[in-house]
Image (cartoon, rainbow, N blue to C red; front, side, top):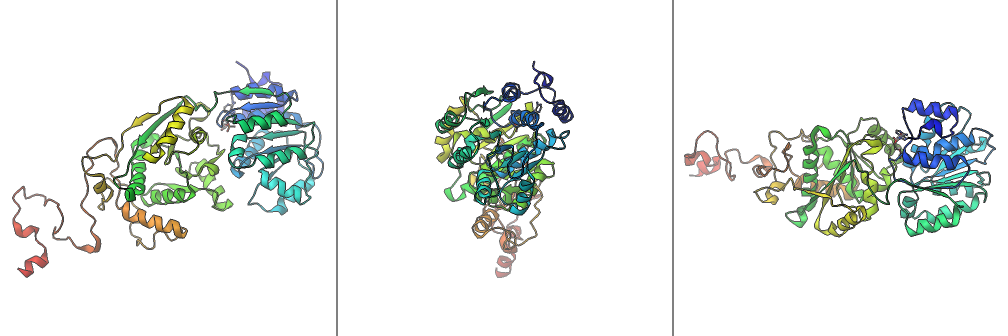
Length: 492
Ligand code: AMP
């Protein structure tokens, strides 16, 4: 097996790797580092979780160890599709440059002031890590020249394609010297990506570590086919099913990312989970940067258990030990499924990916199974009960073993105040339709969940009137007057 010490890396880099606790290079590292160190272009076909970030940062640091940066002319450039991924690449650089105190870097991402970024660029940086839009903003303001770039990295090119960044990438390629070295990474090779690599890479070493669009073998994948009892109840029943699925995993679910297709659903699902006492927070592109950073840090550090995310926001999120990924929605692009579930089962750990599929998503689900060339195990709907599902969804009374509900004392009107209006309306629906919780099932597949009595708004029902409850302790022979309301009694 290849060792890091076989790879010709700078001894100071080797020391930093040792401090990071890595024992041996991952396959993408073993394949990409040697040609990169020889100055060759590299085409790395690898998904997140394979160690691909180190496969370009380690040789870059070794190569940049000699020489000095000039003002406004970075010596290397790493392009990332999202701010989060860019921030993570920057963190990787910090880890591996532990013993290279002189190497400087700057992070150019949106949501951060230009002033501070300009100051760093003016001083001269060895490594510039950027999202394409922000980078071009700096170039257009005349603050940045890319003519000194010796090494250019394009990370997660397939995601750049999804996000419409390919024209920007082509422009940026054109601003860098023809003689630059290019390290290009993508999880999949769509035809458009193939075209870019044919145009801008010169005789690259092609390193492919997993079959195209395959998920790690150590991720257990399951799907629950789900149909709401009624169309207007589907959303709330789906959220309830999600809670039951989470509960069913018990302590095995140490932390989880829940993916939704739409930002609005990210907010609703996070809010609904919080309402039911789960430690959950949303992340998507419409939240401001400081909040996104705070949420991600909390999740990374284990202070937040459940991150509800959109694809873009969770992109590149590097938390090595995510135990579960839930797909609240089937992603509409099959490749996103591979990216999403790649958030778990990282660095050789086991992971579990659980998806909910409603009838209208079945076509997309078929596309996923086709792409991954695997049949995903079907699991039972935990809401399936001998009772009508509609009744289950309308449960208003807490069951004895339900999750504690933190917002119970808040009025229905005040609960969703922080949300945007459209979300507020939807969350209001959560409040009513999700009505009341969760039989916390250790065995969610059981058919034993009983509907609780109908919701009791306005405090009536004290005498048992109008509900089907049994009066406990009197056997089957219930004297009629006990089941009557006070009003009826006084009227008669
Ligand atoms: P990446 O694919 O770059 O997102 O990396 C996935 C995770 O693997 C990160 O948490 C890295 O810190 C970790 N990692 C990278 N290289 C190695 C290695 N050689 N041995 C163990 N873990 C690694």
